[in-house]
Length: 590
Image (cartoon, rainbow, N blue to C red; front, side):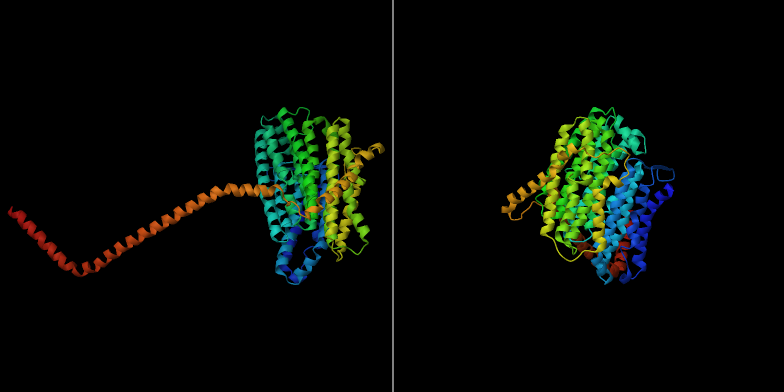
């Protein structure tokens, strides 16, 4: 039964994509349904698989040999991944209802865009599911690359200039990341003579250059995880992507980088070499820097989805710091990883609900506004750790750190949570400023409400090991809750202090514009050399053309003499014969 579910989980998205392509050629545009119930169901087999229990498959005929498994880590990961993909697909059915009508009315541009999205959405899902269950290098890399490049359609969908910029930045960073991942895998696999992720972990642990292998892989996966310096695609891609696409991009696809780190780094090993431990400290500092810097920059953004993108960078910075603890303090990792998985799952559903909520504020349902905004605030309040699953997930990572006496990191994470609360408050305020009436589709707000509920009760449905997560004691509640009101107060103070600037804000993408400036400056000498080479080429061509003209003049003169020779050749031959005869006679007399 589990093997059948696994096959169905991977083949069903392929069938959905195939049906989408088939209908594009066989069904008239006026009757074409781009987001049918079949399309919506693409992730359902994977969701069932996550609750089927632990299992392992070895497929010798697959590429270099497939090793796939559902274990204590991949089961909950697959559960929240498939659930959010399912909710986002339902949301998309309502979100694109207006575009769907335009396509059926004959708008060819909209038809092409919807066809592209409906085809590559299930392919992106397929890559995401494959990388979660994969335990061998080839399968993991195939799934990661498929998810990465197919997601281009999710970003570029609208086709506007801003969307093309965001998609271009995403693609550039994706290519860089894939190159780093491939280099790291080839180096580590070759050094350890292995084809599995477990072998990579062991190889990095014992290899002399293991820290450099880990650095390559961490930077490659860090592009997807939004590590500081490589995060610039997130605030450029999210404001232009459709809301359901942003939900999966920030909810589950960004977590693929986190899963990559957990899969390849020797976390929690008793004998971590000094170089790897030092790399762990660098990773810890980078994570905390992202957590605080993203919050500081994000609160000044005006687009609500840009604010939420910086919130994702900040939250992923916290998770980066927690992963780094597996190298810095290996003894804490066995206690920490269940809380980290719950943290990731809750963030996925809460952030997915917040992004879906941006489409609700753009097409407000005919409900009382206080009710709508209370519902929109719920996942943000939970994300800050003040209620529901957010409080439990915060305690799930703080409790092991308390037990192993890492109080300084707990304080830093608490202050980073203040930044989360401030970002969520600013995002809701921006949504309020940009709200529009019009009524949302029931599919749209239905998926949104289901996402909010799933985010608030994440521990109830997430298949984590029994007893790995506990509710925080009552005496710890204040220590977990206080960042939320503090963040709200800071957001209000920031708004009051920035009012004189009359709405001016720094550009989304921050370091991307610095990178672009440096790249353009570096290209200046190349352009000059190219211009000089162009001049040399033009001069060479002109000289060659001049020589050709002179040669043709001489050749034309020679051809003009050919006619004279043809008419006087007989006389010339007679003269030549007479001269030769005279010479012969003179020689005979001599």
